[in-house]
Structure formats: C-alpha cells, structure tokens
Length: 260
Image 1 (spheres, helix red, strand yellow):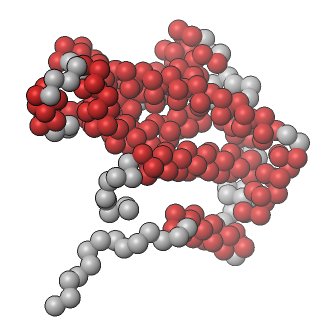
Image 2: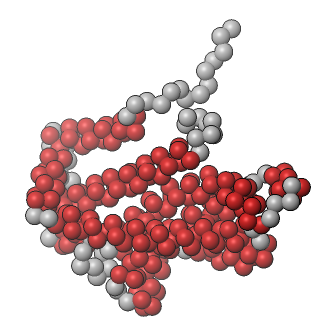
Image 3: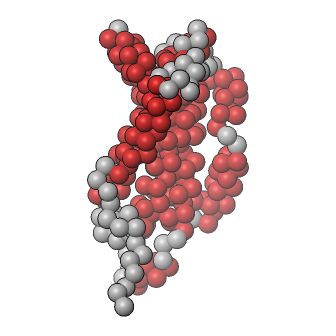
C-alpha cells in the first residue's frame, strides 16, 4: 500500500493572503448589498478614499511616525530587559528564585491595568508610553527565552563540562543556540504586544500617534478614520510578525519542521 501523506503539504505561494482577501471580499459584498450600516462600518472604498486623503495632507504619515518611534523604543527596552532577566534566571538557581516569581506575577497583571499607576509615577509624557510598551514586551520575551534555556538537553551541559568549556564558551556554544528558538518565538508575541499596548496608551492624553488619531475620530463620529487606523495597526502587526518569521527561517534554517 502507498503510504498516506500526513504532513500538511508544501507551502502555498501567497497562502498568508488568503484569509485577508476572503475577509475583504465579504466586507465589500456586504457593503455593496447594503447589509452593513455605513455609520457602523464604512465600506472598503470609503476607507481607501479616506486613507488617500490622510496621506495627501500628511496626517497619516505624521501619526504613523510617532507610533513607530514609541513602538521601536518600547520593543528595544522590553526585549533587552526580557533577555537579560531570562539569562540571569536560566543560568542560576538563585537568579531564578529572585526573578521568576515576580515576572510570573507580572504576567498575571495586564500591562494596561498599570497605566494609572504609571501616569502617577511618570506623568503623561512619552516616558510613560514607552515604559508601558516595554512592560508589555518583556514578559513574552522572558517567558519563552527562559523556557528555551530550561529545555536545553542536559547531555549538552555534561559534554561542555567534559571538554572543560569556560562560562563564556558554554554560553556562546550551548546556551545561546539552545535558547534562540524560544527567544524568536517570544519576539513574535512581543511585536504584537507592542502594537496592542500602543493603540491604547496613545489614547491617554496624547497629541500624536495612530491611537490619538482614532480617538479624535471617535469624538467626531468619523468611522472611516477609525477603520483606517485599525487597518494600519493590523498591517503593522502583520509586517512585524513577518519580519520575525523571516529571521527565524534564516537563523534556524537547520531545523526540519512541518512549516518547512
């Protein structure tokens, strides 16, 4: 008998676009048939026209630049904190005892629930917004990197001790390669968390950013501008995740998985 193929098959070209294209088709059909109330959800062509107008007068680019700067800074600081804490907790029992518990407690607390406290501590300026994004980012980076460290095969540790690797050589040749898959998985969650935190924090007394643009549009009942902001946030999240996935395929090209 011929063996049954159990793998999902070869990757489809532009397969990731199938879902968004289907969603756009349903949205367009519903709007054209009058099944969707324009006041509640603007038609796709109205959203495209609004986006063109926002680009023409420079408003969309300005708000996008402000949001991208906050997201980049928060992602940078949050990733660095998560990686350093994961290494400290993963390579030392004392470090794990001191760090892992508080981080697990932080994971149970939504970052956005800390916004009132952060406003009291840092005011309503840029520092508070960047710190909020960083707090949303560092938890997934820590969790997945720490898990990657803890799941390194103990035989590699024994081999490293047998060949008398020093601490730095052990970290370079065993720890970092072993933790890399977990770190990259954490980065996929982190880039999404950065945009999720940003869309809310920019509505706290901000004067620029995509969240501010959407909040202002809500005040004036401009549904089409809100949809433009949501679409831009979605595209940014999709692009960020795609970049991390691309880096994952390049760095971990030696792995053979179902996604290959």
